[in-house]
Length: 474
Image 1 (cartoon, helix red, strand yellow):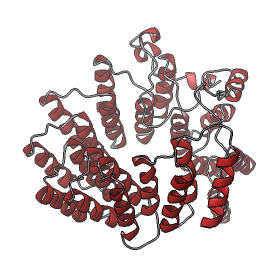
Image 2 (cartoon, rainbow, N blue to C red):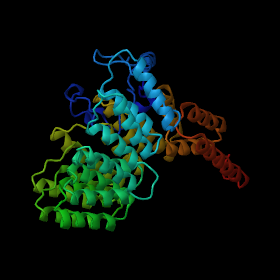
Image 3 (cartoon, rainbow, N blue to C red):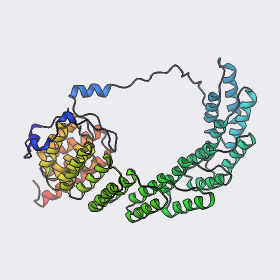
Image 4 (cartoon, one colour):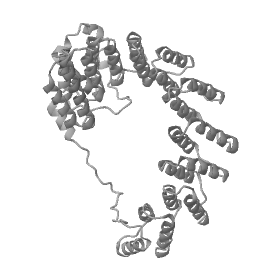
């Protein structure tokens, strides 16, 4: 499956110049930003067989069937009856894991006070059951998810733990912070971190960076900076390299490259050396803004600092240069990355094809597809969608239809942009029935929501009707 139609192999670019290295010397790559699509080089029959194969789940020797415990009501009385019934009828001794599972099941639908009462009932009716720290952490996690506007439930569980000789530790802090953040209680998470830090249970670096990442997504940058400063000044909790990387990534996503550059300087002043990931993040920010020269500057600085670029570095740079219309420069980096032992993958080639299509060189993009396959790199759905969009934009509809056929035979999904361009190109040529067929395929393959697919087709048909009235379309 996925063979290139014969008409695609008429590129004016000589294959001898495209294949600089024999295919056997180039291993298949799997380092991509997104999970790879299904292989596109099998026959249709083999593709279908692969699609049907599923890994069978097998039970290991250490696994045992869990008893059926279901609490349909938050009633404490009903919960006690169910627990008593199970403990008196279940044939094997019930361990800590079982009791914790029962407690978690009930506490997920009950109030904090009822959950505490239920735990007391469990320990009283089952003297062999001795709750450990994980038991109290179950109650803590549920208390963080309660809809209360303050931390009273959380404080109640923490005090309950202390009375049973389980003082909060870093695991306790981590569970509380993650649970509060998952319940969208970021302000409470910040307050609790400060409280626990004051009581000698500060967060470790993983918890610290988790809450910083969460706040970057949900709060203003000033709020994040103030929180970091307060932890550093009051509790000597300092940001590390991961923290700065999170902050740089956040400001780059917000297209604030000036702040990213400032943070890079702060990072150095704090005694940290930027790693490849930090530079890749800043480079990505420049590429989003179509600032290819600045992206190359980041690449050169990496080399000066003795940091070896990785595959992501080259893919980011090639993407940015291709996007900004500097395909020739991107092609040079394609050769450089191969010399450095980083072989192009689907992301690399797709970025190049996008750039070639943008500058009107559809034949060059098709030749690159042929080179890609010859070197053993499987194109994915994004590759074909990029080509389909480019071919239709450049009024090479027949080639686009052939490529669409390849996509259909491989069961690939259409993206919104390529679908819209394809449908518009078909309607321009008066091939409305084929446009409807493309709509049917989008619905059948569940490429994206039906409403968007229909709205796109409908607006295109309205445009066609007006164009015909004005004599601008056949």
